[in-house]
Image (tube, rainbow, N blue to C red; front, side):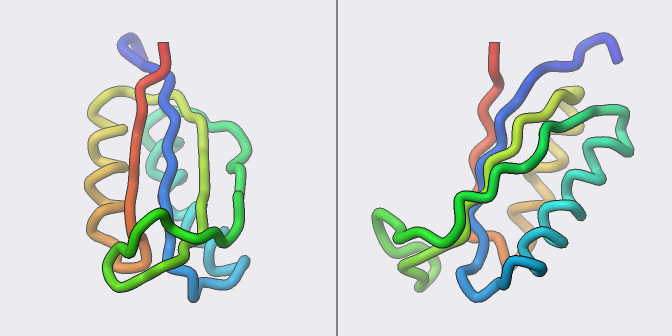
Length: 97
């Protein structure tokens, strides 16, 4: 892994997801990172919070933040598949340093 970078992923999941469903959803996507040779820190579950504005008819969401290291292509794929999931309201991936 020569061009791996550090990233921070924040995503907002459907507020209807319970804790177990949210963890399962998170693990499902982080598996993509490890499968491609990357690594991640323990996910930080912020819990259910009010959104600043309505997104897709939702006024609340479950916030999850994860720091990970991966190739840029893996990060792009992670963003792509998260955006395809109807349980994910919004994603933001930031490259760190």
